Length: 305
Ligand code: PMP
Image (cartoon, rainbow, N blue to C red; front, side):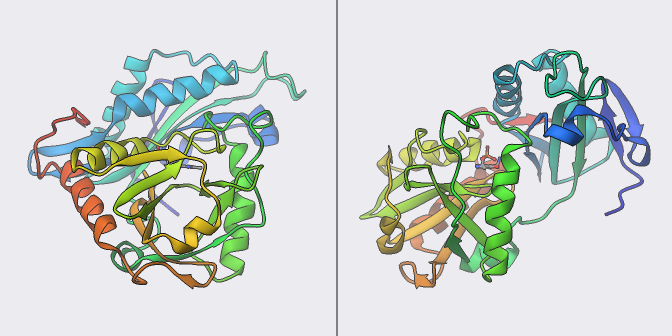
């Protein structure tokens, strides 16, 4: 992975890709002390627009607050820096990764005396689970690894260390020949994918795990709930049992990286018609019409660079 022509924003300065480095004894390297975001920008007829910039930056600051990490910039400064990274790198569509972490200071578990560093990088990144998956659906499996209980790793914080748990599930899924994992929460209810939220369609209604299921409060999840309700669908957040996944008419993932990805099989059981279902397709189309500004930005979700 070589993107040497790019610039990365590091603590307020634009730095060459190859020079954006940290010390090996930084707190984050040893203990996963980071909070981060994944954001996408899309090209449209009027320019390049970042999707739901404010909400992503708000979530970054919320994650930091949970871990008592003081980000030495304002939310407005981080928003502007994100737009600047997309601008200076002359990117069309891209994925943007802001991360705040505890840097070089001391190596005890207590992070208090380590500085908080903030980095923002961006690069072009296609469909996370593949173009073919977007059109025809992906194959997933329920992981034997569960999400942490609410009093262990707080799910609302998008923190680096959480993704060790996600990695166990992802590695197992790949070993088993699946595209992605679905994880259950500590009580055995459906939670989310290793990097995506999940929706079920039953009798033309949408269901997604409630926020009590150790899932991330996904911004795409919120976008799809808003769009679906506007299209006249009932959307219900509740505790969802594993077996409902198998009998649902349709199941799909949502996420910044995964966008809206249909699921065609779970644990070797065909879901619905065995390919992208009609409601998944409708919502996927509506999502891309919004992010690519093919329809009016009526929710104010686009920030032009
Ligand atoms: N759950 C997890 C564990 C994730 O990593 C992500 C990606 N950020 C999501 C859900 C989807 O969240 P969003 O729609 O805000 O990208």
